[in-house]
Length: 284
Image (cartoon, rainbow, N blue to C red):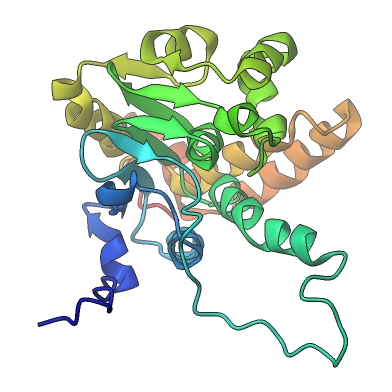
């Protein structure tokens, strides 16, 4: 029996963030419904690792990101969570936290997670099964496509705590909903119901909860038959489009057209067109 003054051991990180691969679809699940699927440092780092693995794995054609249970997709950072990484020793007399420490933590933490999703070479679908709040809201925005249950909510909750959005929210939200709408959502911190999230462009589709798995599977299955390298290249071009000048965008397009045309799927696409048959894309 566990002594009363000793907390039960946490589940292994592979159980707190699970991953499975079925038919080319990698499903990553945040599996801490008991704490609103909020992320500890280790869970966050595990997610980064899984997205980086998905990029390199030719067997993966699509990634689905979701949360366990019916109430929460992800509610942001678990402020009580721990990390196995130890800070370097401080010289004698040095402060516990120096200028630059907090900014480094932010860059290496949630910003790196959002970057891992944006830079993932495979399409990422957010299966929004419940409340997406704080950093969890930014996970939805970073995904390429998002399907939301009709009773789920999206909340940029930061202003309620007197803090500013993190995890790239102020960068991502205006690109989905426009500047003035983004200001309204972040200034007031109001719940955004699923129907409104779809109407203003935060998510692509809202479906009854009973249809959520079916709707996500329809899109994920389509990706398993598409040219994966081309999808990844299109994703990169679109994600950079807001920062590129016309000249830069056109140059990127020209170079990436040449590179993509060297893939087997590109050759298969042209061959199948000439032979008047459906293409058989392999993902490379």
